[in-house]
Amino acid sequence: MAMKSVVKVSAEAQAITILRDQIVTGAFVPGARLIETDLSAGLRIARATLRQALHHLAQEGLVVLIPYTGWMVIDMTSADAWELYTLRASLEALAAKLAASSLTELSGRTLQTAMKRLAKSSVSGSFSEAVEADFGLHETIVGLSGNKRLTEQYRIVGQQVRMFIAASDALLISGLTLVHQHQPLVDAILEADGAQAALLSEQHNISEGEKLVAHLKAREARRPAT
Image 1: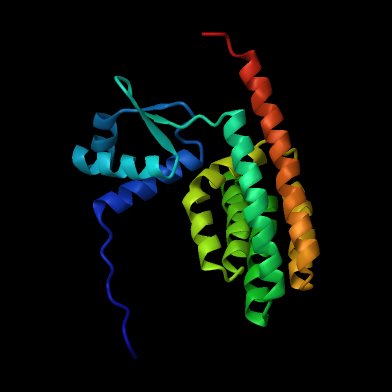
Image 2: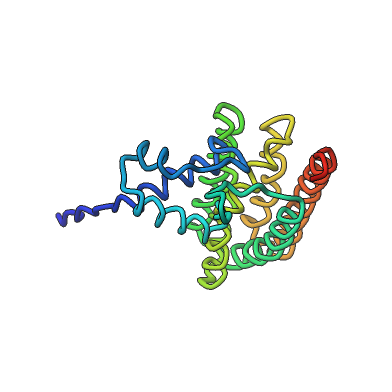
């Protein structure tokens, strides 16, 4: 039996993963300053390695380097949310249509597994687990589209989408709402109904996106003028 080779993960890659998870789950709140000396000490890595990790996260749209101030976690605005949900609506609708049109027994099982994970985490999991399962389901549908270029474009904005989903899911009253929102979409794909799957995907993204934009606009209106 062939053995799997050992894969070494660089300190930079580990730092990227840790910091990304802290940001996406809200452990580092939007707008929070990231102090290089504190982070490098906490992660036990050199500051040069930390900067490389932060520059990578900046490319993912999770942090920003402000001149004379330093690194800061991105604070999603209503404009950011609008750009993300309109982009998602297009990309994910196409992905749902393609996933339905190319449905196989294997892809169907993969989709059902992702939906079961969402249903379980929505009922008995933590908020962060539900968010990850929510994102995981959408990511699965994109992957099942079979379109490599579409998948690559989604990967580029993937971490921003995770932040968007976390902010959007935080507005829900019950975790069960996630199941009700996604089950019809999953059913349409499993029924190989590409047109219905695309429609439901687009409607879901637009509906939840508009809610988040309205919430962020109200928050922005309450902030004192500078």
